[in-house]
Length: 471
Image (cartoon, rainbow, N blue to C red; front, side):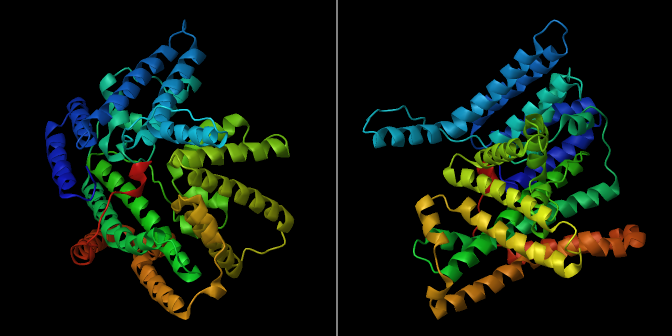
């Protein structure tokens, strides 16, 4: 079920009405389980099989971890292995088989390997990481094991975050499931704003600039300016698309009395790769930091060890996004970029003042480097990627520069609401802080109405799934 579809609007309205009519927390949680399963299995009911397996296994493993007579490490290993095993079969088996077959063919060894023709279950990377995080938190003693199967099933299955996150921590989200919820008028209004703003970003911004991005990346013989205007369009598309999903998820959850963690903090204003990953897909980057990077040693130890840790976590970050070499290269690109920035920061430490021209230059440089990363991310054909990186700006026809200028301006115009939203969050909100409550009463309905009107008048005729559904 797609968030920006009429089906989801009807589904959410029905769940909202029944949910608050039930009143008691226990009955509300019982409603959320079949509602979430219906949402997840709406198109492909068999998606529920690996999902239910993960839910049941980790529920009992977590309870077993609190028993004094169990081998706790073996239980954690069993949980992590089962989760990663499901992920490996559904997401990475085909990638592994195709690469092994290519290697054997190169060695003139013709071996027929079994191929699994299966559809990747939506959101499997998200709910497996959330479930693994819960088990590890119980093992570390950060949270108590959830004894209620109903509450734990809601934690894993909660439909707003099931397909593309944000990845929640048990210490934050499970606590909300276990206590009564209320819905204040201000919560209701802010939830509607998030829903409408999310749909606006998806169908007006993301789907419109996607037309340019898709045409560029489907073409094989491009000039330098047309390629990079396509990369810019994809840069705007993926941020508007993914953050739109997060906003709709957070708005849906808030309508039901839950608060999900934010997943973005204006990533294109980052000044370094580390800063970018503190702003982009925050729930994933913080998960990898806490459950992989820090246990590996983090930034402690020898320089060689720190470099190895960085390459491991960025390799896994890239691989998490998809079973393709371009995602691996994208992750390794950020590993190299992070190391270069750290080296540069040591060389110029204390020599460059933090004045606005310097900050602006850092932001623009990081934005350009982020776009280079998105080229690697978007182009799955490595041969084509190599060709793209060798294009010269001096060999491009004048007409291509004119077309690129037009498309670039159009892309920036459509992205203007994103920059205005960033300006409000970072500066204007502080200016009106003493009158924020008064402003909310009239500005929130006004902006929500304007966005809804924009959806009706400006929505793209071509709309597709959210990009991160495939991960």
